[in-house]
Amino acid sequence: MSQRIRGVKGTRDVLPSDTYAKDDDPWLRIGHYHLVEQSARDLFPLYGYREARTPVLERTDLFVRGIGEVTDIVGKEMYTFDDRGESVTLRQENTASLVRAYVEHSVSQHEPETKWWYVGPMFRRERQQRGRYRQFTQIGIEAFGSPGPRIDAEQIELLDRWLRALGIPFEMHLNTLGDANCRPRYREALQTYLRSRAKDLCEDCGRRIETNPIRVLDCKNPKCQEVAAGAPRMDQFLCDACKAHFAGVQESLQRLGVAFVLDPKLVRGLDYYTRTTYEAIATSGLGAQSTVAGGGRYDGLVKDLGGPDVPGIGFAAGVERMALLLARQGKEAAAKPVVFIAPLGDAEAARADQLAQELRAAGLSAEVSFRKSNPANQLKRADALGARFALVLGDQELKADRARLKELKTGAQHEVSLRGFADEVRRLLEKAP
Ligand code: ATP
Ligand code: MG
Figure 1 (cartoon, helix red, strand yellow):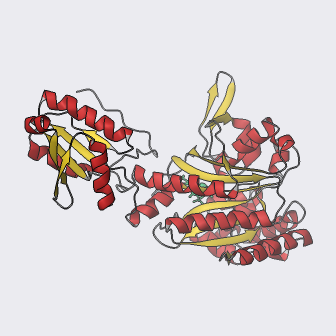
Figure 2 (tube, rainbow, N blue to C red):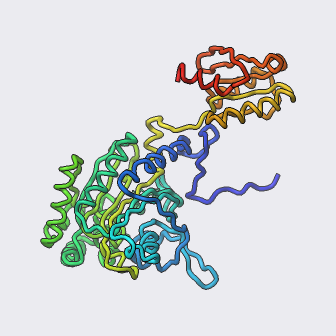
Figure 3 (cartoon, rainbow, N blue to C red):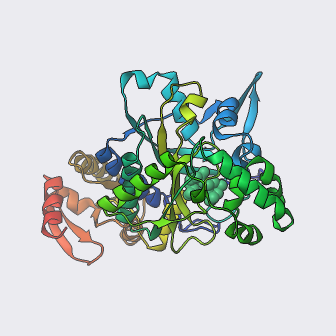
């Protein structure tokens, strides 16, 4: 036997069924992804968001300049390679890519306000853990050209509605990071404090004091969290404009009836965030990786990436974490055949193919067996597929053009005509949906 080739570490296969899974998340199935994605597809356009797709491959510079050289995801988590003299990187997140596209296609010249949403794989070379993979999926939104604060609240309300529609238990955390005006003073005060506590920080945070001190507040190490608890808070340093903005966000949220928790320690890992930041944190079911979605305002990013001075705000949600939460609740959108047809001989097989074609043309799902087997085995197979009805097609049925349709869950037998079969099936479905 030849040697097997295994998947890359930190990536995973998401298969239709978990019966053949052998990893530690056996219940993560494609049906969960479909639920999450479909609900986004249904909901986001109600708020005016339109889907945008950008490549998974971008020039490395985009992320270095867009996300910031001193962040984790640029510092150590990039998949970068040389493409004949040009350095390219698999995207780690989509905001920088969408901003690039927004600038490249001069979108601001066509529309003053733009709302885009996306779904797709992201790549980060992180340590593999439950709920943390090297290829994972994000669904997110970005709004360009709206200075807020009402759009901030609208996005948070969208996220709130989406997670609630899916039945995910969460809390919405809210903070402000100030802006180019007031954050530098805060940064300095924070640095002074952190330097005095440097010996109590983890190795990464020791480095972050000088490069990205605000990120220390977000470190998951318990020692660092203890230091963070005593750190100066951004709200003591906010300028008037940032204060007014933050008050505006909260007022709008209250008006829209969205519950939130003020969380002065909430910061985002990326450099480009200004003012409003928010995170939806699962209240149970995810353990350490409990942040389901994170977002915020990035008013300087479009300009930093060579575009006009246009503000932006958005969030990104981790589909795998949401899917895990749905799996816990036993929710799944599984595609199951309405009718499973098992022909016993060659003449029956030809008729079975036709019947399946008829059903599908009528919008009913049908699966035909392509293997020869006895009726008992075929019924077992229909059951395993979760089919609603099974039709065993033999010589007699073919001659009479009539057959018995077995309803698998109840065991009931329905006598039907094979002429106008799709109509017969539909009638049965209408009787007991
Ligand atoms: P964390 O603090 O959990 O590392 P982050 O700040 O790196 O999150 P973002 O870059 O804001 O996360 O991404 C938004 C969401 O994408 C996260 O809340 C999470 O649900 C998901 N996510 C991020 N990294 C991963 C990963 N490696 N595997 C699976 N999901 C991820
Ligand atoms: Mg991270």
